Amino acid sequence: MKKIAVFPGSFDPVTIGHQSIVERALPLFDEVIIAIGINSNKNYYFPLEKRLEWLKKVFGSEPKIRVTSFGGLTVQFCKLHKAQYILRGIRTAADFEFEKAIAQMNKAQAPEIETVFILPIAELSAINSTIIRDIVRNGGDASPFVPAGISLT
Image 1 (cartoon, rainbow, N blue to C red):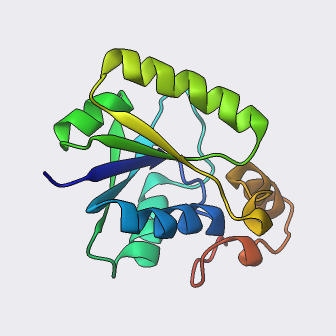
Image 2: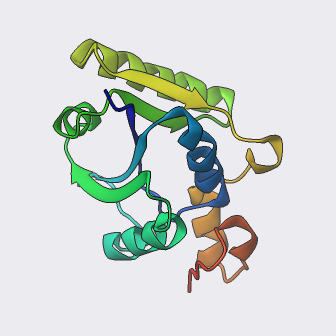
């Protein structure tokens, strides 16, 4: 059976932290589905089409990666795509507590799906999409924090 992981997130925008997590996860899985979750309660800074375009640009040449979007529960998406794993990055203790609660709820809903946490490399642990958006909103240069070739303007 193929080992398939789903890496869900808003990727608003994709960062070099996201890129690092995916690249480090590739040897562990046969396929990684990068899935932009659509949450009607969330206001996104960048449009869905742009975020999909960026992810496809960053990961498009890797045959083990698929990029898509979804609505609803992550575990439902995993079942639909026969994914046995949910991939998450954890930067801080606060991230861990939040992600642990979600992982436990996912496990209660779908016991056959495991959540796998990957820690960022130390120099990337401070990078997050919220800070990147703030830099962009205020006219700063966010290019050192996003994958090569991604323009946030």
